[in-house]
Length: 338
Ligand code: URA
Image 1 (tube, rainbow, N blue to C red):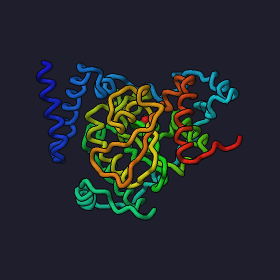
Image 2 (cartoon, rainbow, N blue to C red):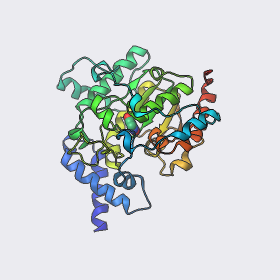
Image 3 (tube, protein in one colour):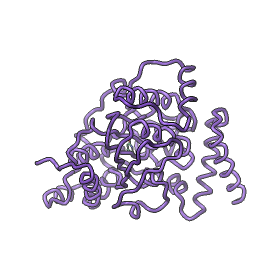
Image 4 (cartoon, helix red, strand yellow):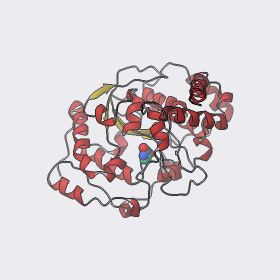
């Protein structure tokens, strides 16, 4: 049985790297990914298995399921960290997906396919000006919206390409969209997103100055048949990450940031290409490692807690703040006066 699983995992790896679009039918991908996850669960706690097995308790659940955050106020008063948690009631309604910075002019399927093929090459695109970068990001966003390379593409309500400054010096990258993001097509707009906004503000930056994206571009669900259910989020599994990673890698290559903050273990492990725990990866800069594109300049990456984890564990906020302060020191940013 284990041998079968190993064989399937190897087969899946091989057929992912074959880059034949026809091979990547959702059903085949789903089946293979499930076997990869099963295989990984059986071996030294590898990335995939744990993610696939563990539903994500995220920002996107109803308020009743969220822990109360009384302690947070105390941390703020004590000066341990400057971001406090918002209540579910104060989460504003997101702008419609059509008003995203990435909304792009309609392109034909043939044009999209042709461009997708040319951009699969291992070369960075010409991205010298802000306009060039925005156009390149728009193109990637269109490809993401048309993508059906894994089963998540069949069950999502909206793809979530990411948004922000095309020339951002700093990117924040999470694991994958949740309920709210799936409904609106924008990243980090639920409760975790509200906390992320506060973390960004505490660094003296505005959300529009940075770029916010995810490793997986479509909503990983525990029960994919019910995208309307709350509490249905999970982390993307190894197969889904493998299929999707070319998009975030191309976005990074276009934006060419100096720094990336990886939010949570899934994003950190994928981007640092290390299976160590988040605890072991936190607290220092790593050099970004990309599989599918070349970087023009090295990018420093720091791993910290996912804002959804901070909502559940407010006591970790001081450590997350310490991580963000390392980035601020490198970028020469000062915390705004209260
Ligand atoms: N969690 C993530 O990792 N990404 C989002 O966009 C929202 C919640």
